[in-house]
Every structure is written in C-alpha cells, then in structure tokens.
Length: 184
Image (cartoon, rainbow, N blue to C red; front, side, top):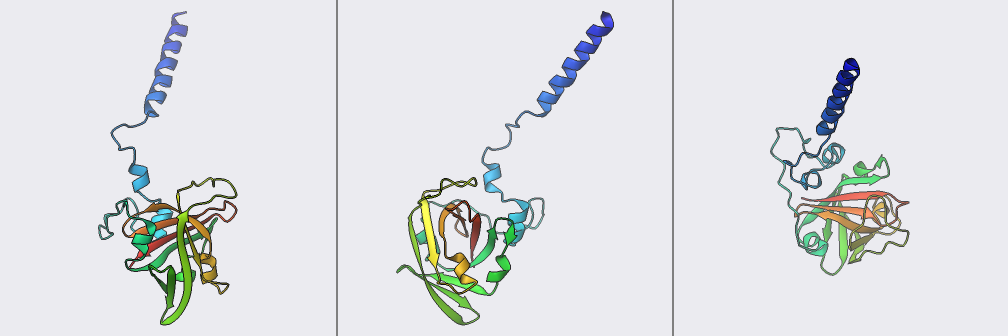
C-alpha cells in the first residue's frame, strides 16, 4: 500500500509539473505575436529573421491612417505576393506603384508605365469569412488582363497596416491571396 501511495504521489507531481510547464507566460505582452511577422513572411519582404541581430529594418507601428492616406503618399512595391502556398513575389520585382488621390495607379516597370485604377470601400465578403480573417477596410486594384499585373486585380481587405507596410488579403477564401505592399 505504501508503494502504491508513493507511485500515486509521484504521478501527481509529474502531471502537475506538466501543467505548470504549459501555462501561459503572463510576462510576455499579449500583442507580441501580432507585432512580429512569421519567419517566412519576414524573409519574403526582406526583413531579418526574428532572432537576427541586424537592426537595420525600420520599426513598424500600427497606424490610424486609412489605406488611401498611406498609399497616396509615396511609391510602393510588392514585398510579398502569395496565392495559397505559391510564392509569386518575384513576378513583381521590376515594378513600383504610385497611387493617386483620383483613384488611378501607375505601375512602373523600368520606365514602361501601365495605368490602372484602385478603390477603397467597406470590405464585402460574398463567399463567407476566410479562415485567415477579415477586416472592415476593403481595397481593390484593376490593371486589366495583362500578366503579371492582372494578378493584383482582386477584391481585397486590409488586415494590417503600418506607415511602411500594408497587408492585403483576398475577400474570397478560394483565392487565398495575400499581398504585402512596402513603401520605398
């Protein structure tokens, strides 16, 4: 009986230790994960990995500015373009984008200009809320049917924005498209 009691106590200690080891660390701010991009995303947009000692990347802070206010102040490039697991970022390496307040956008490919349009409105989720989330700020671009710019012609929503990055995701879960625009 004594041996059974010792084994029972040891089991309780082991189980208790396992639970303590799995408890949430309250010393870490709750929004830390939302402030840090995943390793793959950071690599895709040219940022150092989370454990890197390279401090050259600018500090990103969330901004109350609208997507339109951000886009119309500067020149942008596609820092990341993903459809499902397919990375198409390199298709846009030669392009820069200038968004005008009159809802036109100019894509510049080494001096060759292509005109398109853009809009900002309340996001509409016709096909249900995607598993990767939703947001109230809708965004869209139209460049016609010429590739690769036609790949950007989508109904999107802004999932996150800082003064130097705008994270856009498809409102259609079947497209599973994700675009990060980076200010130059």
